[in-house]
Image (cartoon, rainbow, N blue to C red; front, side, top):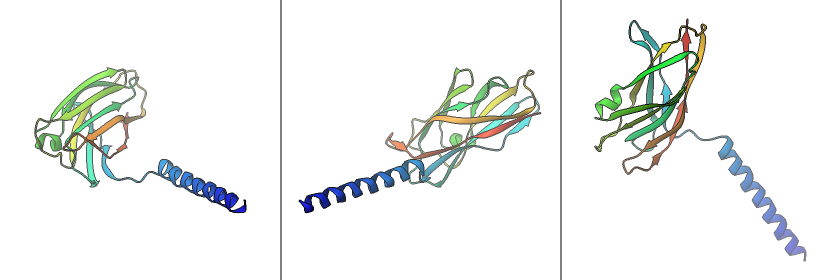
Length: 168
């Protein structure tokens, strides 16, 4: 009888340890793979506010061949004008397609009918105008629903880093 109790206690300890280890990976994710980040924001006379989207590959485990993401912004302060392909995606002969799917959310798809990996660098430029009614301040922009694809259309690891748009 004592053996059974010790066996049950050992199983409980093992399950508890596995639970702790699992929680570590859920709450403390290891950053591996590519990074999608907001780059340095600029404003050009007549061009509006340019928010670059940068693909970082410093921790990559596989090449990136396509990207899809939602770009979120404060629609009370910013008016979306268009998205244009960035130099890194353009150099790999990719195409950019976009749609403003709701107020404050633009869906971006970067893809190509080729086997060219997207190199590190700018993949898109998001073009905005500040609304006349927007008070001066800092407005957050971020990514959601982001997916990167490898050369077999499988999912590739992708970390997301939003940014801020200053309006003066």
